[in-house]
Length: 485
Image (tube, rainbow, N blue to C red):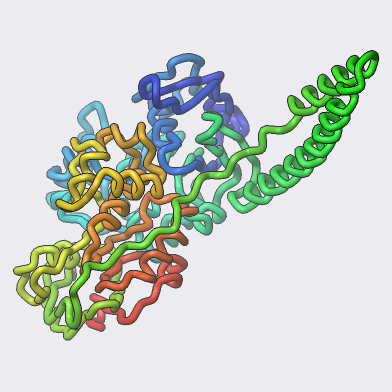
């Protein structure tokens, strides 16, 4: 197939999840062979749904999706399905194929080398860290050798080395690729075009250039549209004032007034519907548990994983009220394992003061019951949570009335993250434990979240691989799990 041949085309595609949840409205765009494109849009707009439509897992209500004959597609999802977490590495890769693949091990070795991951064939998927699971997801798509590669938030959980490795891979990649991501620097390194899913019009806008180029194009367009509307609004007001004046004169003047009103109406119709930017969550505060003081948490020992084996480390960490600790270390060393263990107050090697409420933001959202409705999950955070509290906090995180009725399992990963943050606000914790809180979250929300964490007055432990996010948060102490401090 020639490099510039069209390999994917949406023709007036519409899709909705039920009557109250429209996603696409008569969307049309095309994609040429060999192009690397970013699919962007706010949390819950339907980006992952577009991927499912391309893969054929979902079908449009109307319109058609055309894929070039013989063109193969593979996707690396945001997270590994829960049903596959108990599989071994070999079984996990075998599941990517409909037919039995004999002697698959050399193919596994090849793709694991591409993603820079050492993974024994008989190791269980659930035993890998979040960052390592992200690499497994990418490798599971690559092993299929697709003509079109779909990547859904591929930098989530990856450390700096992992993001650099993935970036180089995509820069050198010769085939077609569509990426969903909120990481601007990562996207700018390889993106040649942007498909923007507008959550307000339910359409996809197509742009040439990388993400920063597109932001400039959109900003210039909005400025011109606002200028045009401002000029028309001034003329409309003048015409209406004159029309009112002539209408009171009677006789022929009433006819003049009528024509002036008609002209004003025409100008109102000519006003441009200015493109709305993604909404940003409201500024918020995570209230600290009252009546706590002094030392909240002491850590005297922890374990790291070296060559897939646990190694004990001694340390002396004391976290008091209004102190923030940053945990660092490469993927797979045991950061998430340590955070998880701290939520169990009887853990050996750490002491948490009695009666401390722990707010735990887990990167895989497994603290949420996916069968719960959003409203139920928020209303049961504490015994004192009122309906007024729930609705007020939810609105600040862009959780509308329709979303409140949905089961958590039906939400996008980004929306699950916003629900988890809303729970923390309602909980009023004394100890806040956050494992990669930027994953899946629209980049517009990140400064607001960083501001809330920076001002949090309880004890806090944070894991994040996003330097720009960390820079915005007050950090009082750093524990490098690999070095010991």
